[in-house]
Length: 267
Image (cartoon, rainbow, N blue to C red; front, top):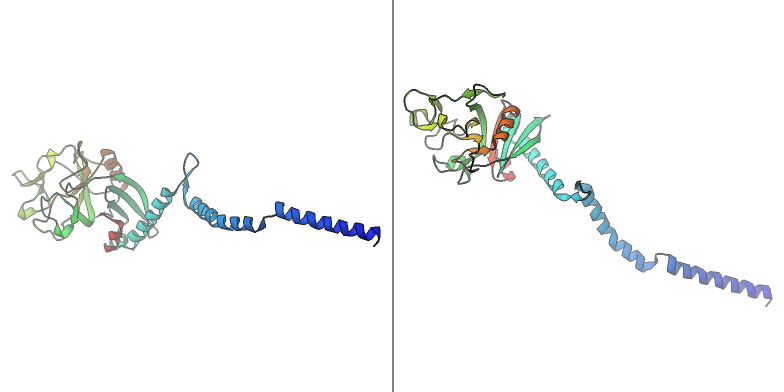
C-alpha cells in the first residue's frame, strides 16, 4: 500500500469520526426530537389561550375577559332571536344582580352598559305565580310603560308623569294596578310618600294586559333605599344609574327579568 493510499484512508476515517461526533453533540438527536414533540402541544395551547384573552395593564393576560366576551355573544344571539327582541329596539336585561342595556343595530343586540341592581327580598318568581305582597320580583319580559318622578320634567325620550300629592298606584279592585289621581283616599302605593325611591323611576308593565286582581301591582324600576338593595318586588338601582338610564332608553324598550341566561329563549 502506498503512503498516499494510507494517508487517504486515515483522512476519511477522521472525517467520518468528526461528522458523527458533531451530529451527536450539535444535532437534535432522537431524544431531543421527542422532547420537542412533547412540548409543542403545550406551546400551542398556551398560544391559543394568549390569543383568546386580553392583556391587562401589567402585561399579563386575563382569560376571564374572553369568557365575558363569549357570554355577551351568547346573550346577544339569544336576545336577537327572541320574540321580544324582534319587536323592540332596546332591552334592559336583569340577570341575577346585574342590569344591562342592549341596543339593537342592524338586527343584532349589542351591550351598551351594565349596572348593579337589586330586586325583591324573597327573590324572583314566575309572573303567573306571583301574588300581591309576597315580596318577589316577577320573572319575564315586560314593556317599560313610562318614566315618572317628582321633577316637573326629565331628560328622557319616554313618556313622563310627575308625582303629585294625590298620586296613587291603586290596589283596589276597580282600579287595580293603575296610576290614579284622586282627592279621596285610594288604597295602594301612595307615591308622594317615597321621596327617595321614586324621585326618578320607570313603570314596568307587569300584570297590565290583562290585569289580574291580586297578582301584583306597582312594580317599578327605581332608586334603591339608602340601607338596602332589596325591595317589595321592584328592581332597584343606584341614583346615578337611574339618572343615566333616563337619558339612554327610548320608547321601544322592554325589560327582561331572569335568573339565568338560558331562560332568554323562552321570551
